[in-house]
Amino acid sequence: MGYGFQGQGHYAHGYSSSLTALKKRFGMAPDRVIINQTAAMFLQMIAQVIGIPIEHFILTGPETGHVGSADLLIGLDRLLKSGAIQEPHLLASSTPYAFGAGLMMPPT
Image: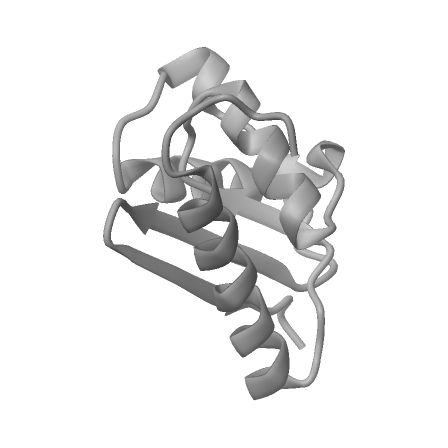
């Protein structure tokens, strides 16, 4: 992959496995992402691993930095205020020892 940080395989596997489980459970593959905000290099690696372009990520890190689990709430707030919930969104987060993925659906 060419990303030079420790544990890249662990994170690549964790995010990939989480998205695979979500697809299997719900029978769909979201194309938009709200994720915890880490280094740009790391987000690029995640985009590559899960097969969703970085342009489809809600990025809040440049304005707020990485604020832990609150990254998801900031991204979700940005999405809700934009009124742009027209398609399913992947919510993804991690710690060094756990990975999680959720699915947010547009209102029906």
